[in-house]
View 1: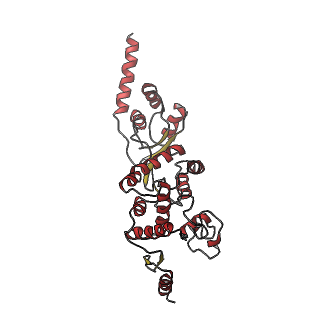
View 2: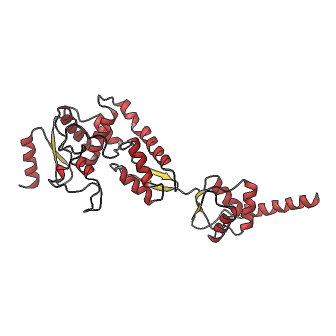
View 3: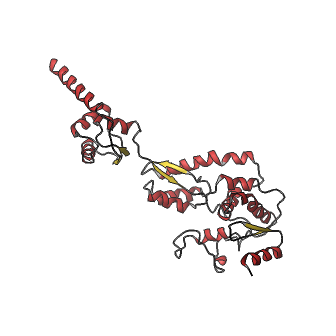
Length: 314
């Protein structure tokens, strides 16, 4: 009995010394614990990285605190064994990657960004997006993701932000268009507009053309149809050629009337709002960009042609 009490007291003393020794100093070290990794392997890994001093104490901490969590953690050198484990288990040391999706990115660009940061499998992410037809529903923003997340969870977080930031706009600004139609037009506006204050005007132009059955003739839809451009090593081919406008695709609004099958990118709340609240009584049907990124609008084709010649100095 006395021997058992002595052992418990010794364990308690060791625990106390280890727990209150320090909470680590220096720059955090990224450590990844794989699912199912043994305590001995983790203890050896942490000691080799300079996080803990004693493998034995860490294994004791595991026995007293119910096992080893899997994941990626930011741990400081020379932590106490018990503090290191507690920090991992309570989430304070969970490693997060900050990742920003720009407004107007297509899902392929998002997939590549996710894969490059080891957030999730880019191919699985794309498969889910295409299967569920989520282009346009992936809210562009800055996220904090853990490493090696299931693609399903990444998609859920991004669509949750869509529900929070975009969905209320449809109630706030009712439209005779369907949600998919609004998102499709908003995605074109997003890729077309350079300056935020012009979005409602550009939206009005496309709505005017759509309502009278005139082809949208939107360059971004052709860029989307072309996909990845090997020549410039990027999506969204910068300079379209006349032959590009002839591509046979349901997304080519130079050849097809009406809206493309769906959004061509993931638009911002401002672009969605521009479609829901376009500039009132704005009857332009054409626009052309000037050298400063602004657009010059016209109601008639001959006026539009004069604007083009003037801007290009012809």
